[in-house]
Structure formats: C-alpha cells, structure tokens
Image (cartoon, rainbow, N blue to C red; front, side):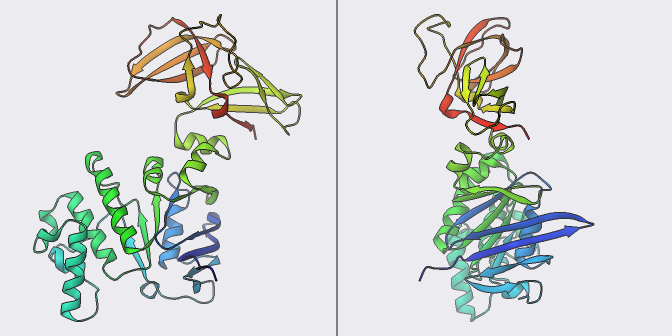
Length: 359
C-alpha cells in the first residue's frame, strides 16, 4: 500500500467580506518534500497557511495529516495537536530567554532528553556555541537559525514557513536558505513554504504551487513550470518577457520572425507569442543576408537599438522592431553596449517560445 501524503488539503475555501480569498485549493506534500506556495501579495498564500495551522477556519474543505483527518467544517483538531511547526518573518524569539531556553520552550520529557535535543539541533544549525547567548546579542541570520531549531525541537511532521527569509540581507539569504533546507531534509519534515519570490521557490522547492486570485493556477516541479507555463502571466511571474502579438489564419500567425504554428486556435483569434530576453540572439555574422536560418531559428528580423545597459553579468539591449514598431529586449552575456540607433538583426529560439490565445 502506498504511503499517504504527510499533508493533504482538499478543496479549501475561505471568504472575507464576500470576497473569496482562498478558492478551492488542493495540494499534498510528502515526507521530506519541500513545496512552495508561490504568488503575488494578496493572492491567498498566507491565509491558506493559517488554515492548515489551525489559526484560521476554512469555509469548506478538509485537511489531512498522514491520512488522518485533522479538520473539516465539523471536526477540528486544535493547532497544538496537529504536529505542525511554524516559522514566520518575525523570528518571535523570547528576549528574556537564552538561545538554549528558546529552543527548549514547549518541549516535554526529562531534563536530559530536552538538553540532548537542544544540543543536537543547535549543532545542526551551527549555533552550538551560542547556547547561553540572548536574542539581542545575535545577528539576523543567527536568530533565523535559532528560530529554525526551536520550530524543529518538538519533531513536527510538517513545517509551515511564511516568508521566513525576507528579513535577511541578500548576502546571508542564500546561505541561510541552503542550511535551512539541509536541516529540514535531514529531519524528514514535510515543508510548505510561502513566498512571493520566484527565485526562492526555484532554489528551495521540489514542487511549486503557483497561486493567483485565491486559486492554484499551475503546480509542478520548478523546471516544468518555468519551461511550460500555462499562460502569459505564469511566464511573466518567473522572468522578464517579450510579447509578440499576432492573429491566427489557417493555424498560423505572421510575425517579424516568420510564421508561428497555433494548432487548434480558431482563425481570427489574437495570440501572444512569449519569449524571454535570454532567448533572443543577435545575428552578428549574417546581418540578415547570409545563409538561410534553421527551422528552430525562424526568420531574422531587424531592430533599431533604443538603449543598452550593463547589468553586471550580462547586458540588456532594447530594440524597436522595423516590422511593427514594437519593443523587444535581448539579454546578452558579457558586455555589449551598442549605440542607440544602431540597426541589428535578431533571431529567436522558436523552441523557447510560448503561444497563448488572448483571453
């Protein structure tokens, strides 16, 4: 018999003031898995987390832990009985307790067992030498590590994390994320992480559930969501995009880069062809007049440089296209800063384009 999900929520809804904030949300998380609930502010992520934790009640739907019902609209296990740990932006350490006392808070058992668990976790998060220190003596990154140890101390089966790294500076954030992930994986904890940062979700998640307007619009491995977005908004959430517009005739759309297939799209439908800036290529050799392009490259199209900026690891060049006056951005590795007004020919990776009907 297959193992049930560590956490499963089914058809959760919640409304406030007549507005449905969480709309028929379902997802599952296996032991040792990290799932990121990703989306813009106000899309229902944190409300979903509070419902799972038991501090907010759903209007409908049910929640299961290891296959056992913990909450529906009739039956409800209290928050403290759900074996769920919580981590938030605010580390919420007790200022009057030492690091060791903070981690031990809420633990039950003998003194020896408690001390052993505290020592084990502080060593895991690299804070073993700070056991007698107090929160005000710690940096933000150190407080984050202590908060993680405290949340893990009771051995929760599930960890809910709401933007836990947003208070850290960029220099520390990646280091703390990686260490947190290693510790959670070693404990076998199922993790549901709420974030509005795509980069954080891509870095940490085994699976991403992307929310918009209270609904999960796409769910899958980071690679799959990034490379097979269900609509333009999903593609744009993960990176800057270019949008080429056209109309379908005979399952084809005419663009500056030649015809694009739009199978199954009715004639007359407006479509948007989405391509990321890193998948536009400047054709330095051909200048639009050399050998015919390959099928994957399509037709070269001429654009006039509007501006170019060096971004540190690449250059961003913006073009006004001759074909229709539209603007496209190309991301070029290394330093490339052509003068405004320079004409250049562009090629696109057709296998990296997404065609979406305009709704």
